[in-house]
Image: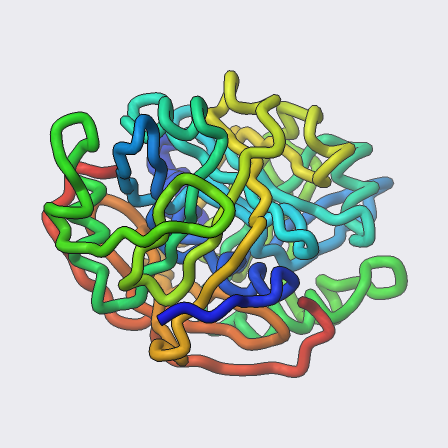
Length: 177
Length: 177
């Protein structure tokens, strides 16, 4: 189930640096990669930077189509996220291999992932740093959340298959977004 | 206590997106800001992107000196990190206000923070995206860890003073760095 999310709330999903899944579709062939190297750039309209190595099969699809979806998995998808990172779209249908469901996006050709609690439809808006750092600037043009996953726990990847799951939640008075 | 860290291990400290502290020193005046908008760009030599808003007092110092330190706080510094984010270096000596200890870095003018479990001395190496996104590309030129904080838990900031502390740690076989 997917519910539209106001674009000015997207930064709250991404600025804590969760592991995300990035989908592309080149020549109608959907693919997924796992990604930790991303940062918010602007809150409203939401823009982010993400690094997709030219060694990733997704690089060519993202570069050619200039579109992708950033899908955010909760805990129950942690093992699948690692499995997706361990295989290449060159020789694997990752949706089938990970038993995930692709769904048409509204504004981009790349697919949403039904099982993720958030899906962000993105267009590449700045290509200046692709050559030197494989860094794509993305603008989120449409955002979806799953109301049936109301308090998702995300996870982070310090490296080498080790994941750190979201733990205790604490709050301090803050005037910082 | 500080121990030099090989530069090819730096990415493991940052790629999970922890809240970090960024120090600068302009006209010998040390300052600190709290930052969540950063991403690794390259592992070796380590480069990262970080967004320092022009609304932050640190922007001018970073832009003028082209140097900073990225210091990574563990849990026991969570409240101080929020407090640092709530005040401005314009009218506050943040080291004094947060009771943190500045220490001379080796290669840059910005100070290390003794209480942090890792300190990364950085130089700005690409200024192309500062104008449009306040995005600085940094190269880590020297890295330090505190052997007395061997298994630090970090924390992440989904926004508005809410922090999520590192929780359970799980591992899967991975060929992904």
